[in-house]
Length: 523
Image 1 (spheres, rainbow, N blue to C red):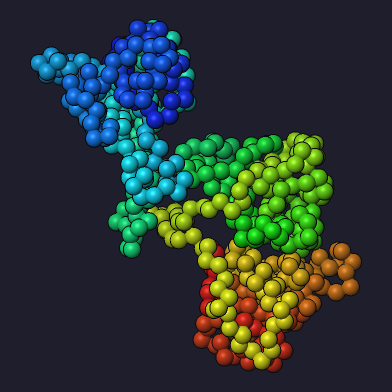
Image 2: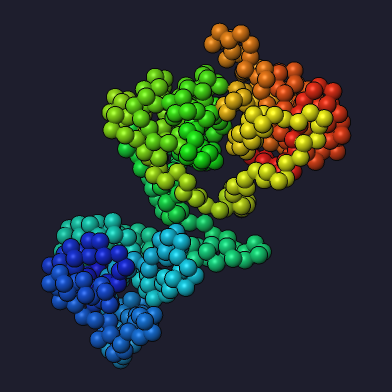
C-alpha cells in the first residue's frame, strides 16, 4: 500500500449540507475536481464552485426519483480500482480514479424518530450511499472516505499538512469510521423492520454513536464510553447546562431516575432520588420543592451524593433545597433563570434538562452475557385497573388504593427483590436487591425506623402505610413482617403456590390485599 495519495478527484453526495460549501472551497483550493449529485451539486454551484454532475460522468441521467444515479461502473470502478493492478481495465473503459468520497446517508434514523409513515421511512433507506462508502472504505489503500461532517476539518488539516495528500494511517482510520456508519445504518433499518415481525428476528444488531469518552467505567480500572442510539430519548437526549462531565455511574443512575420520574403525569409534581440505580426516595407534592422534601425524607442518608429527577421545571425554591446537600446530578424538563443562578454556585453539580419528559425511549432492552446478549421488551406496561383483585376480607380505602398504585409504580423500578412502603403519596421505606423477599421487607422497615429516630418522629412512618412487592410472597413471613412494621394494605402480583396461606395470614392480620396478576422483576 502506498502511503501518501494526492487527492485529484472527489465525489460528494450528502443529505446534510452543513459545512459543504467550506469543504468544497477547501478542495477546490487544492485543485481537486469536484463531482456531485442532485442537491449537493446545486449547493456547491450556489457557493460559486465548479462541479461536474455524476450524470455527465456516467452518461446516464438520474432516474427513478433519484433512486438510481451512482450505481454505475464509472463511479464504482473509480472507487474500487487498484491503481496499478487495474490500470489496463481503467484505460480500456475510460474509468478515472476517484481519490476522495464524501457521503452522508439519507436521514433514515431521523425519519423513523419523527414518527413518519412506512412509505416515507422506506424512501429514506439509502442504497447508493452505503454502496459507495463500502467500496471506498475497502479500497482505502487509494481512497479517502468521509461520512461525518465533523471530519471535514480533519481532512482539511491533513491535506494542508501534506500538499493535498492523505496518509495511509488517516485513510485507514476513515475507512473504519465508514464501515461503522454503514453497520449502524443497516442496524437501524433492520431494527425498524424487525419491529413489525411476530417472531424474534434471526439476527439482532445494536449500534450507537459516540456521545463522549468517559474517564472510566464502574471502576477506575475499566475503560468506558457513552453511545447514543439516535432516538434522542432519555439521558442521551438531555442537555447538560453545567457541571463536571458525567461519569459512567452518573449516566446509569440518571437513566434510572429519569425512567421512574416519567411514570408520573406532569400535572402532579413528582421527585425521584436515586442512589446506585435504586430509588431511595420518591414522592408527589403540591410543588416540586415539596415533592423533593418528601422524597428526601424517605432516606436522608442515602440521598447524599445521589441523583435527583423531577417531572416539572426547576424553580428557585426547589434549587435551594436540592443544593442544600451534596448532589451529583439534577434532571428536570427545564429550569428558570433564578434556579440556574442558584445551581451555578455549585459548579461541579451536573444539571441536565430533558425538554419533553414524556419522550419515549427504546422499546427494547439488551443485556450482554458471555458470548451474546439478552434482548427483551422494555417494562413499560402500566398497571391495569381492571385486573386488580381484592382478595381479603378487608378492602383498601380510596386513599390506600391511591398509595398502593403509587407504591406499585415505584417497586417496578427497584432492584429485585423489591419492597416499597408508601404513605400519602411518598415512599417511607424501600428494600432493594435482596436474595430473600422477607429480608427486603425487614430492611425497608429498619431504614424507616432509623429515619424516624433521626428526625425525632414519634413513630416510624411505616405505621399506617401500604406496601408493594414486585413479585409474589412465596410464604406469609414477608407479609407478616410488613404488618409488624405497621402496613395496613398490600399490593402484589399473586400466583404463588401458597397464595391461600398468604391470603389467610393477611386476613388474620387485618390487612387489605390487592393482586395485580403482573410481576415486575428488575435484575
